[in-house]
Image (cartoon, rainbow, N blue to C red; front, side, top):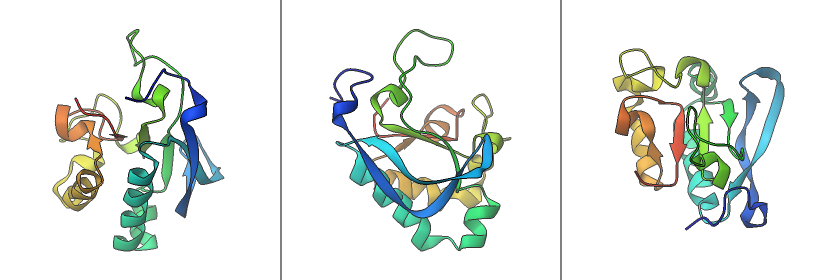
Length: 145
């Protein structure tokens, strides 16, 4: 559906409705991200929903502005299959508080108060791996399991 991993000819940049920060270098601001053109509108709508629902203070407090990555032509962690990031159809948010192996008992986005955030993702055709696999709550993808 998304072509070959690493095919950047199928990507476009979306301009974010709020400024994000690189999770590993918070002084660096992100105003746009590279996404596959087939799911760019879904991700843009998701970020617009976040911006329109949460206050700037909530976005900052909960790390909804902490960018953990989108396009990265790589294999899945610990495997050889291409990651959804390699197709530019995945975005990670707030990786420090939603680490890969953390389940809902530990991940920030696994808490009940983030039900609305999860619903926003679903409404925009995005899957949160934490909700599906109880791990990797940082990861949103426009691909189904």
